[in-house]
Length: 360
Image (cartoon, rainbow, N blue to C red; front, side):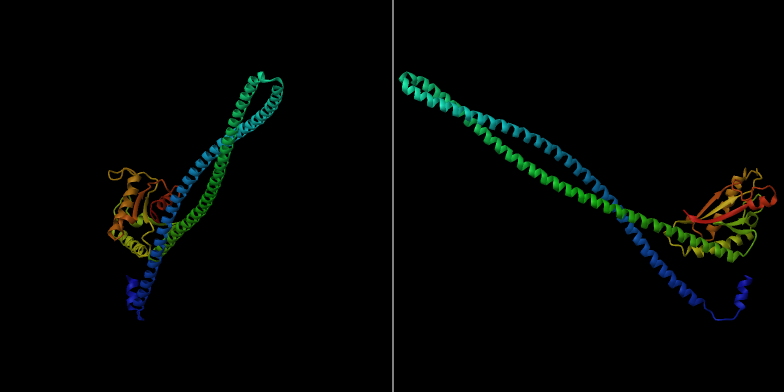
């Protein structure tokens, strides 16, 4: 308040309206950029989900194509075996036809010889000639039947060759489709890997952005509270000694404690207004005690005391306008000491309230 009074007495140009306008325009630009980033992240998530579904469908199609290819290979093997068997039968039929043709030639020669002998021996040989002629006709009939079977076998062989050619063409198309599916699957894998990399980069940027807001929050607190030995920054936490906020063995906030927390709440609200809504941040309030035991009706142990103090600070921050969804209270009792030594100085360091701006 004294600093505020000195500023009011100091003459000078009032630059506050211009500063507010600049901050408003900067806030509009930041909101617009964050809106673009949110839309891009939504489309990125949608594309990643669609890519996963497309990859699953492609894998199913590849599996179906493999099964169909195995079935076609089995059918092709059966046709090849049938073709081999028919070819062997055809060769046997050709050999049989040649044998029959030799027999026919032999019988024809014998008939000619018989006719010559019959002409010499007279009419009593006509019966025998007729018998030989009948046998010759039977052999010719058998030969015609063999030739008909041969023609049918040749027709079947041509049909089998056409079926094999059609199967080979189908196998080539299936192989081409399989290659195309595998290539598309590889492209999908590359796209998914790229999407995952971009998502990891976006998440890392979010973490870095929250870290920058944490640094700003701690910087504002340090600027407001000053360089005090009982309030300090330890790592990523802002630490209040318990004596600043509470009386020994008590979890009630006094007027001076509320004044200190008012400064903290103001700094937090200023920084919270700049944090994008999509960043899941919370201010965690942790209560700690020293190792000396406590046993009262209100606080049977240090657990109850540390938790009650953290809850009391959290409730007061809520009363100062901090949303409950952005606060968390935890009690650690004496089990997270800063100084493990014995003595009042170590006990005083361990009795503390810690504030940590972190992810939910």
